Length: 195
Image 1 (cartoon, one colour):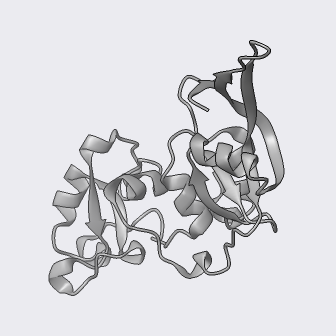
Image 2: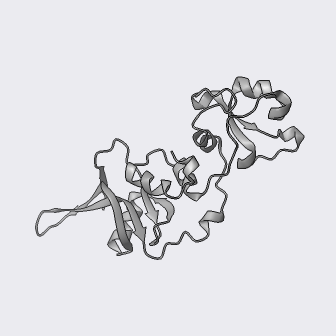
Image 3: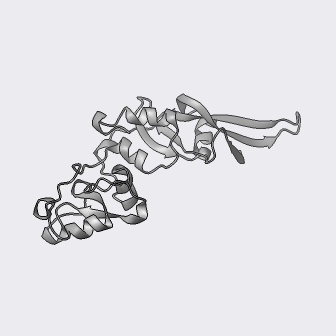
């Protein structure tokens, strides 16, 4: 297989790989999905066809080989058993996505370049740089809060910081999630945090 054509998409999204029990594990590049299909490691699929991978031309028939790839594949031998205990990597992009690009002090939605990572318990007071201690804040609110806790600054946050689970981490690291993939990922997100 040497080319890929997105089906009904401007950007080619990744394929969501599940274990056979239906738990999300990782995002697959279309080439890895082709290998899984060809080696019969795909146990089942879900959702619309989002890729049509094309291969070479048969010398005998003149036909081009194609392979349709579904949005979601469950792979034999893949396991999500220990992934739910792993804390996802904290980055500003993932934090801003978790908080929906909204300042958790003034409640205004901003573009990423205006936002900052605020430590609820400031680093200067012993606060850690971990998911459970950071919120998205606009520059002016972060500056106004300074090296104070929200209580000390009189700025109660609009939400409590939390550590995303594995399904939420998969959502945060991919910008091109199709509806079928989001439906399955949301089944593994606590109801209060579903998008």
